Image (cartoon, rainbow, N blue to C red; front, side):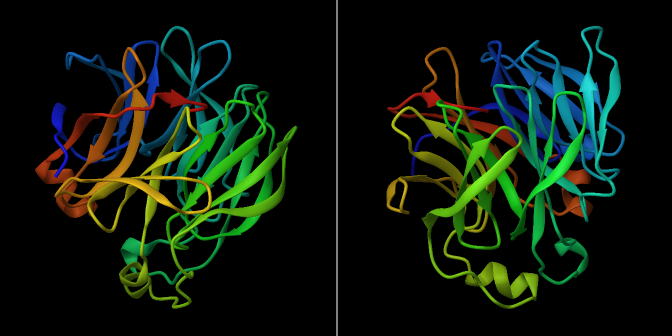
Length: 295
């Protein structure tokens, strides 16, 4: 098993890590906080999001965007720390907002659950929404099965998205505010056809959750079903595996040289458990190839 150290513990359910301005930003779902942590473990709450924060990102001027899960809004953190509504996606997103990536031009690419698997809803596909820097929004892709972590390549041309219930990473070309030329970037098996979420999870070879990109063009992903991180090349070849012995749901490359892999780890992601136990943490391990792209 790979060697991991703990950056910070005592969290409810850590998700959506981002390395920015020498700190790791993360959403702690069940305490409704966005937290920034230095590499020596000093933490600061930078935003309270009453309807639960999910994906975050940064506009070119440094202001933060935050996906507010339950009310399906994108919030913007102003320079003075106040939160304002950036976009209302309630009529575009059929369910809770999930992860997102903010690209080099300030566009936010936003996913959503598509179905409430924690409360027994059946598996169904959903959409990706593009939010322009001025807050206007539109659906730009559909028929995705639980779009989760996303990355933008350094050349600004490609969006890669993890489909957690489809055994795959999917790529699109970015053209202004549109996504074209959809293709499978990495496949780990066939997409389960069952509409029962528990059965679908059991059939997944890989359940890609949060992802990040490295300078050799490989994707690190948190495999939410198998307590491991894997580094994947385009096409699906697994280049490296790091087993954790605990559930992992997102990862981010960062640190001074971009070679620290930060990992969101939680023994039980169910809200009824995690909101009380606060056993979630950020783990760290070292890798050979540094970060690239966004986030």
